Length: 136
Image 1 (cartoon, rainbow, N blue to C red):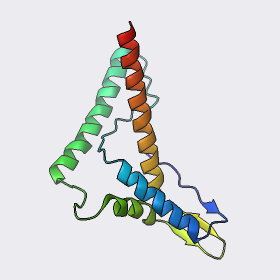
Image 2 (cartoon, rainbow, N blue to C red):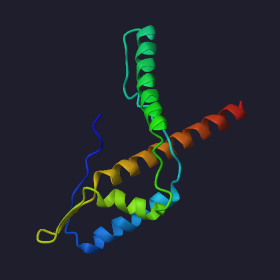
Image 3 (tube, helix red, strand yellow):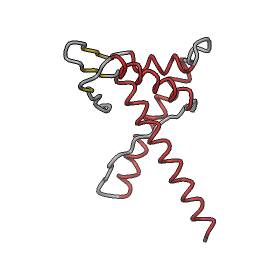
Image 4 (cartoon, rainbow, N blue to C red):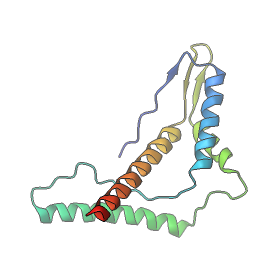
């Protein structure tokens, strides 16, 4: 699965770079949740049993990656503030061209924002479904 494309910002000075570093730091501080995503996408199979098997296979893949993370016991460094970790998301892979005045943040920044938006949309949908179920 290919991640989102990072867009280059034209007519960007150092202030844009510093602004995105600040935004990433703020986002990292505001979002301390850890989530595992199950990407089903536009999975359409010809029969209900084939659909069920396909979703089960995708679930198995997600669970394997979750298991790998748990087994490796990789935790974010506790001695580094979340704001610094957020700034690093933008810095890793960023490209700043002072001559052409273009700036491209690291790919992790857009991936972080997409994940946060997806998580918030899912939370809002679950809350709406809960409210609707209680109204019945």
